[in-house]
Image (cartoon, rainbow, N blue to C red; front, side, top):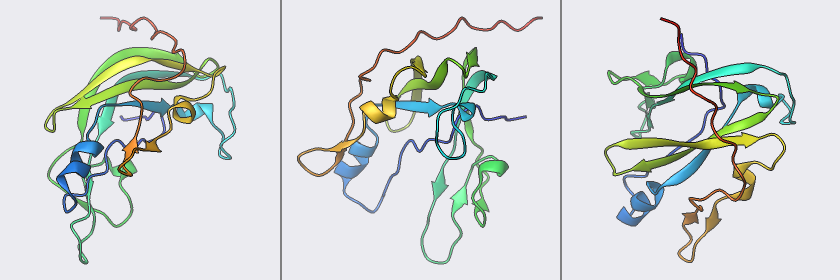
Length: 171
């Protein structure tokens, strides 16, 4: 059973009808901050629930708006699929990580660098964002470059905690 440990993060937004340069910009290498679900309350305020979460994969999918009156196509797991979307025969993709046990009293988010060659995605775990420092998203917010495109530093401006030892499953 899929149990999310973090909030959903939009990784790429591609407009295939736009200029080629916008696709290249959208597919650039980036650091992503996966905020743990139990580190925020419904009003967005930080909380420390003391929950320990198991992180063992990144799951990703696509949603495609083909235009007109057609429903949005989605390969998302059913409980993440927006209402009214059409399903596809493609399934979501999974990249195995860890597994790590993450304590929400100490950790705000997992930071992962994403790189693509346009075909393959490479997920590179970088570290943990502690609750005691500002979020990576706050410090590395996207800003506009000289051509008006979003630009994001691939290097976080905060000290990341090391990832915990990989939790070994008993045989």
